[in-house]
Image (cartoon, rainbow, N blue to C red; front, side, top):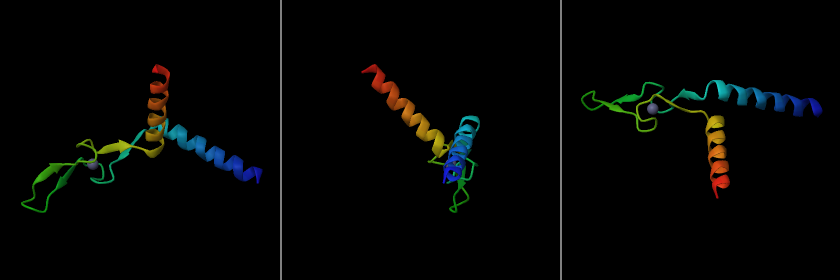
Length: 77
Ligand SMILES: [Zn+2]
């Protein structure tokens, strides 16, 4: 049982570390291209999900940013 908990803790730490090193991942909607090619007249339009960036924050990093923002807001009060 202890081994399972330690393994889970190690995985969580590794994931948190990788979120610090690599906070972004390719956008799911446009697959990192930042734009869509419309089927109508092959027009190109920017991706709405990532605003044409082609990348989005990973879930762990987004959770960390949310936590940090809520902590900062609490301190100012
Ligand atoms: Zn996108």
